[in-house]
Length: 67
Image 1 (tube, rainbow, N blue to C red):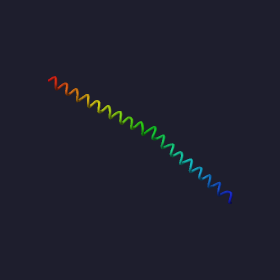
Image 2 (cartoon, rainbow, N blue to C red):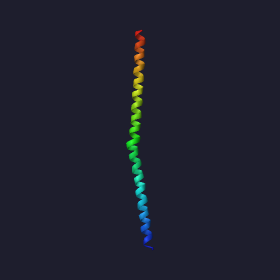
Image 3 (tube, rainbow, N blue to C red):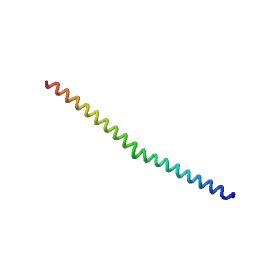
């Protein structure tokens, strides 16, 4: 009985440690593969929208100057 307790204790600790590490690695991969590309896409879209707005504004100014 006394030999079984450390085996169960260390076996349980190893299993819990495995799932703890798995969770950390899974979170890191989610951040790398989903969050960072999403932020980059958002910033790229925002930059394009600002550029398009600026181009439209300049075109309207040019049209007003022509008339």
